[in-house]
Image (cartoon, rainbow, N blue to C red; front, top):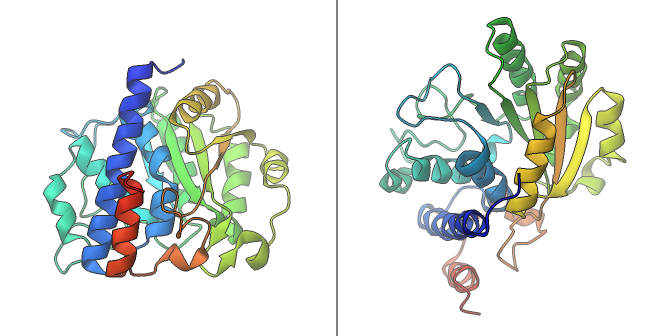
Length: 278
């Protein structure tokens, strides 16, 4: 289903606000992961504000969709989206990565409302999501979808491909993986660190239905999610083409911004760009 112009504009406005708020909080605490948080912004926004069934008043509602940020280092953007959705107060973002805060550097399912799975070590998320998807089927819950959001660096982990084999074997068509495909990881580009070749062909070989889209186009993302949900008898993956550090010119495509603190001068430049002042 195509988005209305009003809904598309609403989602884009949310993304702009989330990026501004993210840079403000990461600058204030002088830590965190700006690059991967900025690249996954539209994916999280499209899911939480248009496509996924979640209830902030009842986070453990059994018929909810499960959204798992397996690339756990992008937690700051997940927290900002969860706060806007109503899982906890927006003001709590000021406590990010502080002692005794519910908002730690990586998502913690035991502490933070709305977080489905504690993640951080790359490669564990998809395996857990396969288990979630199979568990829902065995419980007779047919109308809930499990969304697993992966990063490029995760594909270097063997457990990802073991999870793919299990997903295909058990025909988990209620599982949709979304790859935040920004082609950059902690120490360089994906091709420099571990060339993956034809990623779409690899997932197809492991039994996935593969889709691709512009990961910064909310309308295209929503349409592709609809197509993936219509697949029967096999899991799906969406290769969402994104840009690391999206929205800030000096961060875009640069691996150094995986987890670099933001200086005062860089903060001013970034905010001017995000606010459209230059």
